[in-house]
Image 1 (cartoon, rainbow, N blue to C red):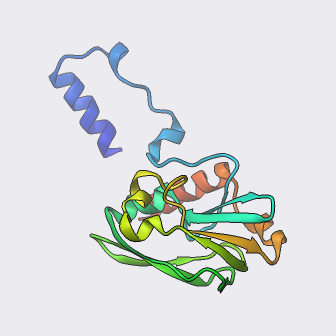
Image 2 (cartoon, rainbow, N blue to C red; image 1 turned 120 degrees about the vertical axis):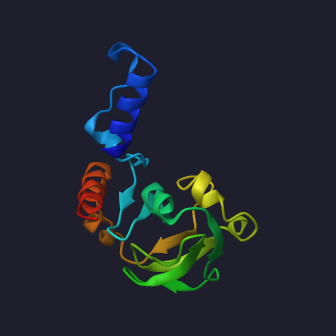
Amino acid sequence: MALRMWASSTANALRLSSATRPHFSPLSRCFSSVLDGLKYANSHEWVKHEGSVATIGITDHAQDHLGEVVFVDLPETGGSVTKATGFGAVESVKATSDVNSPISGEIVEVNSKLSETPGLINSSPYEDGWMIKVKPSNPSELESLMGAKEYTKFCEEEDAAH
């Protein structure tokens, strides 16, 4: 809301007509990206399930709230994760946050690029900034996660409450 008021006052000061002002839809109030085809946890992790492997990372919304990521602590390949339990941490210029697994399973791959370039979580949270790949031990856990529309609504409600 403050951004809209700033944009409106700036447009007025610059004498821009309303025809040149951008239109913000309700979904654009949250400037974070939420992708269709992914599942989302209320702790702000995402899951992309393809075949027998699920890729996990933190959402664009989470990285936006964290700020610049400067360090990522990840587990070893071959270990296991349990739904709603921490498997690593992300340290930013603002805070250190635990990262929880949205599903249970065996860790089959860890994104080693993040040790050298933790900022990939900021610049590409859904592509290059993924954290771990897991072979799910209970694929039905995916059904309890939110889709894109539900997660967008969840973020808007959470942000409005703060």
